[in-house]
Length: 274
Image 1 (tube, rainbow, N blue to C red):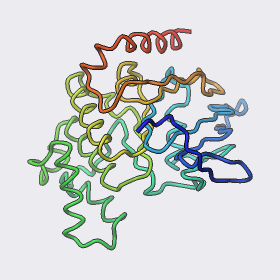
Image 2: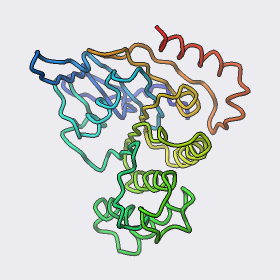
Image 3: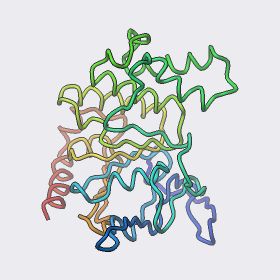
């Protein structure tokens, strides 16, 4: 599917008409933190539409509000102004329509890998049988390569294995939108590459709308349909958007061998250096 192709069907929200394939809509988004010296504006007049089944990566300098924006989409951080909606429904707090993978997987250390994934599955699928919920959790643990670690406690797992559990947990609740906050930022380069491949393999099958923050230009290009570049704060907004036109499914080798890769890379680095 070409995710940049607009549908002819529309829906209306507050008198504004959108294509029906917009999954996530950020409109005039603003985030302000009060300080003793006055308001500190993190984000201002930020507008972004993300389509169904699209994978978008977001890059920008530290402190530009990327994580703040993601936490607002997740419903974990109140909105100061503007609107965020998923399929036209305003975000008013956390919900199972949005799965989150954090930089640190935040597992319950005394629980097993299976129990950690079941925490979300049990909440989202309360009417399924115990066996069905177990099957869902085991399926996604298998997809991330942890079929031999179902019953290992999270505290016994390496950092990379814990992040695999985090990926399985997020996909297992079948969210409409997957939010990823630098999920591989704390991992070594080899583990990082392995988990990028696992993430994109599952995403190719599930086709969940994904929004991922990264500081890694190569990661941003490899994973995304579009790379969103944010201006530096305060009052950060969208500075530029780059469409990545590699075919899917894509491999690291095919991406690196494509001449456009180096053009994309230069574009992103030039933006970040100015």
